[in-house]
View (tube, rainbow, N blue to C red):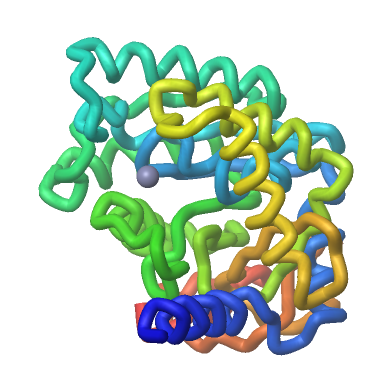
Length: 280
Ligand SMILES: [Zn+2]
């Protein structure tokens, strides 16, 4: 009885985190997100995280003409594998996934995994990349409302570092993946096969037959889409939202949906200034 009860509680917890407060708004936000072209920087802790949690959305954005830069903070060499050249293997696997999904470029920062929070050079390195890429849209792990079962210190560090940097570079829309506070849902049904293939590209990380992972990806996408009657979806939490139809002075779309009041440094004379959440 106990395992059944625990399983049921786990399921309820997951389902709550995947259900947006406003389904219609979440779907609208998802459509706007993948409508391109946009300049994107996707930050991830290890090779393979991004493909599993946001690969479908990134594929759709690539297909609509967005320029997608990926920052892989660590080479993943420590991830429970005996091979001494695991870092190099995982880099090749990430390149394969990038080709499948259409990333423009993958930037390997090359720090050692399992200790990202203790690497002072990480913040400046990401800042420098950020300034080169000049993203309009940024993806990273949700450090405040992480999805249960995928919480990892490196994942939380990736999200927190982005939050630190965005305080001085607020002119970007930040989307958190791996979130249990979903406010944006993207229909990835047309590209679920591509996403699945990109996840399978990380062969060194597969601990079961590929068909099992393929099925898991589809079940996960189904769970994400279920609250809004989609067959396959990905979910995000968006930061710095003011209202649904807000547009910048340049006529560009600013994502909206939830009002998150947070402090950001005032930008004198900026028509695009936004509020940001204090709890970060
Ligand atoms: Zn990871």
